[in-house]
Amino acid sequence: MGKANKVLVIGGTGYLGKRLVQASLNSGHDTYVMHRPEIGVDIEKIQLLLSFKMQGAHLVSASFDDYQSLVDAVSLADVVICAIHQILLQLKLVQAIKEAGNVKRFVPSEFGTDPARMEEAMEPGRITFDDKMVVRRAIEEAGIPFTYVAANCFAGYFLGGLCQPGFILPSRERVTLLGDGNQKGIYVDEDDIAAYTLKAIDDPRTLNKTIYVKPPKNVLSQREVVQIWEKYIGKELQKTVLSEQEFLAVMKEQNYAEQVGLTHYYHVCYEGCLASFEVDDDQEATKLYPEVRYTTVEEYLKRYV
Image 1 (cartoon, rainbow, N blue to C red):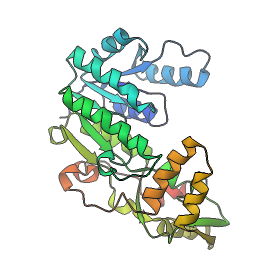
Image 2 (image 1 turned 90 degrees about the vertical axis):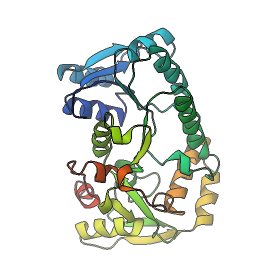
Image 3 (image 1 turned 135 degrees about the vertical axis):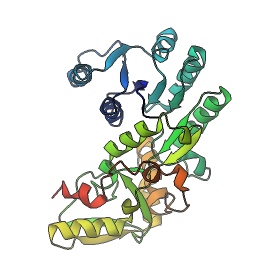
């Protein structure tokens, strides 16, 4: 623990992926960023990759459509971290890692709710959890050393919109409470998710385990989040309540992709699925790595004032 590793990040230009690359560079690891050969004219992606290169990262051209290129890419690394959205594509990656035989730790694309605890999840959102469990089984059957990161709610999506689906900026006028607004969620700054993940990649305590990112000050209900925002803006928001039945009725009118996302809000905000169980200290990131100073909900919301 503490030595530099060769870290390959796949999906390193995405919302979380770019933060994982930056955290790896900040930690002093020899960092490799995989990118597709056919970037085309995506200038922002090119500029981001070049900014990583200027900080010392190695750019690796490879594709899920070219299996040998995947094997060659993972052969460069001790640690592979994946942050892609197409969960089942990782089955090709698992196969490549097994063939390469050199990877000491694989962190698959999860970073949300622990899928092992979502066996009773509702359709259609449960497909996300089911697919992640398919990948987990493949990893474990292949005998690949792993760490799973359950990072709960991305702050940008949940706190920015005061826990309301479809909003990423907090209103100064009104808010819709989901149910009674009292179910606890867990909100984590995306940069903190990346920092904790990079801490865990070579920690023997996290080998073949799930770690949870559960900052104690960030376990709050929607009402508590709204109260923090109201304190900042010096006024009380107009509140309406969306019952569970109303939420489900609205959800059924949406397209498939939106229903998947709304299902996750349902389990978090109406059922309280994230805070309904205890996490042992040896599996909780803020306890394992107290030297990492996490961003509190109060600090996160202050940026919107």
